[in-house]
Image (cartoon, helix red, strand yellow):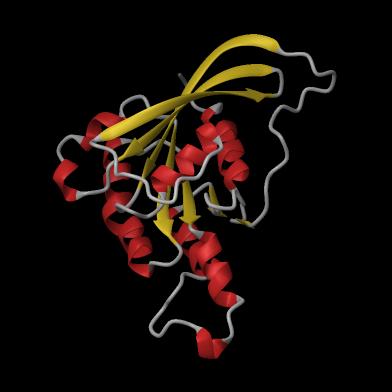
Length: 207
């Protein structure tokens, strides 16, 4: 399957034809991992509450929020877990991998080192604790790269480097990720795609 770079909002995931909703006790858990300050918390806040906070705190160990979504006519409770990225929490973080159905492996598009860490440190941790769980590679802070690309060359900050879409796609293929999605919690671009893709792959997992 080709890895696509989604750069727009996805269609709604409630695809029932007649608008009816069939009650279903379906609960799934999505866990976001990655370096501290790579945009995980902002992404999950946008996914769960549709808000963006310029300055967000790093969660202690892990925190979660529950949202209700629809997959066709099925009503779902989706738990979104936010893992702390600092080494301080290495020993406690495995708790967040229990009963998880989808992993969002996050990095920041304005920090190439965070992609390197996603491919090494974080991928190794994820595959150790939950090797059979679907993985989605997510490039956060797309708005920063967009702003840089539209800035005149002479006005660009010296030394600024960004991960390209092609580099993200290549990384996703190496990791055998189910998808690669670029998004911005600030503008909300791509966020619904992250949520919709998480829902889709989580329903393929056993409870």
